[in-house]
Amino acid sequence: MTDVLLVEREGAVVTLTLNRPEAMNALNVELKEALRDTLGALESDRTCRAVVLAGAGERAFCTGQDLREHVATLESGRTDPLGTVREHYNPIAARLANLPKPVVAAVRGMAAGAGASLAFLADFRIGGPSTTFLMAFANVGLAGDTGASWSLPRLVGHAKAVEMLMLAEPVRVDDARDLGLLTRVVETDDGVLPAAQELAARLAAGPTVAYGAIKRELSIGDAGTLGDALAAEAQAQSITGATADHRNATAAFVAKEKPVLRGPLTRPPGGSWNVGAPAGPRRCAISPPPGPGWPPRPARRPAWPARRRPGRRTPAARPGPDRARTTRTGARPRPASGPRSAGRG
Image 1: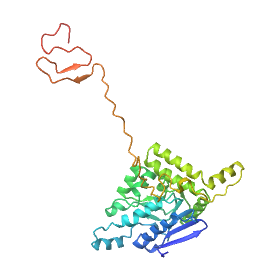
Image 2: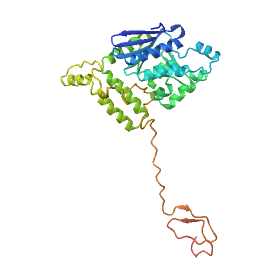
Image 3: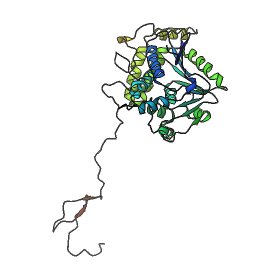
Image 4: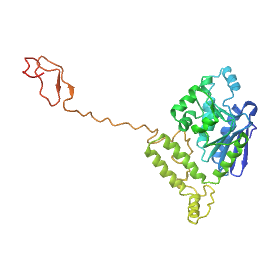
C-alpha cells in the first residue's frame, strides 16, 4: 500500500490513516485511489470486523480536495475537470457508507469539504477540543459531494444542512456535539484516536453481521415507506437469525454467560449477506436497490370528491333570458325578473 494511506491492523480492527499531514491530509489522486481500493478490499475481508478512519498529524482530519492539484486540472483544459467525483469520490462514499461492518472516524482538528463528508458517512465520530467541521464547497463555487447531501440532512436535519452547505461557516466542537455530528468528545486531542480504536475494538467483538444489517435497515427506512422498512427488517432477521452469533448469544443469555461472537460462520438463505437487496453484488446504501417500489414516492392524499353543503352557491349553466345566474343547492330558483313579494329582502 502506498505511503499516502497507512493501513494498520490490531486484532480485528483496521485503522486507515490519511497520511498527508503536510497538506492537512488533502485528497490528491493517489490518496483517493488508495482509499477507494482499500475500502473495496475491506468489504470482503473476513478478518476485518471494524474500521477506524483517521488523519495523520495534529492539524486536520482531512481538508477535502487538494486544491493545488485541482487548479492544475482546471488549467489543463480537460473537458470534465470534476470527473474525479464519479471516478473517485462517489465510489469512496458508496463503499464507506455501505461497508458491512462498523466504521469509526477519529476526527482530530479540521474536517472540511469532502473530508467532513467522509466523517459524516462513518457510523461513529470521535472528536476532541480542536475538532471543527466546515462544509467549504460553496466557498469555491461548488455544491456538496462525497455523499454530503445524503448524510448531512440525516444527521442534523434539512434546515441545518442547508445552513451548513450554503453559509459554509465552521462548526466548532461544542456545537458539533450538540448537533449530533459527534458521537463522543474526549478531553484531549491526543485521546481522539485511542478512543476511536477502543470503540472499534468493542464493536469488533460484537455481532458484526447484525451491525451490517442494521446499517442497511436504516438506509432503507430513512428513504422508503413503512412497508419498505418492514420488508427490509424481515429479510434482515432471516439473515441474522441464521448466524452462529445469534444462536450462541441466545444460548449464552439463557445460561447467564457471556457470549462469544465471531461473525458469519454460516451462510444465510440464498447465499447473500446483502440486506434489503437481491442476491448478487452489494449495492450502496446511499443508492437504494432498484426493483418494484423503488425509488419510494411520497404518499399523496387521495383526491376525494368535493362534498357539497346545503345552501352552498355553485355555478349554474350559462345564464339566458329566463334563467338565473346562480342557484342555491336544494333551494327554489328565484325568478330572473318581476316584482318581489312583500316582506322579502
